[in-house]
Length: 217
Image (tube, rainbow, N blue to C red):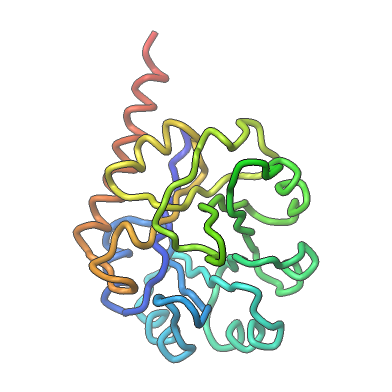
């Protein structure tokens, strides 16, 4: 199978960005949502971006952020990809001259395939857990079997992932990428380098097991 990409979200410190880079993860997330304990200012984001090595992508997460604020942040911070985590329309998401992904909060009754089709301009769709009044970062998983197997865009899986369950998640959904925040933290916004390394190692181990099964005659 293709390598499962790994994003470590909610980075608030330069030292945590360096830990992400050392782990072999593919991307780190900066949260520009003031209600989150992992929110960063433009100044914090700039300091983090300064230590990010080549080929580690920087993702900006927004939740129904005003247009002018998003443009101001994109002008100040070298963002590679935007993650929209609110009720943004496809037209709103597509206007910033950056690749983008759209998060969906999954609960029974949601027509996931229809939502994928609605956001067909996205690079991928991120599936996260639904909780009333909380746009993300719930620390809980959702029922992975609710996601159909044949979807028109790549899937990024989030919501309550950690080193102990990410292998099961990969074997269940075969996502293009996994996204973790609380599962690799000491406290909200403060990452644990060892947990980051173990999470990435668990992803790679799950891939190796799948490859081994695929090659058995």
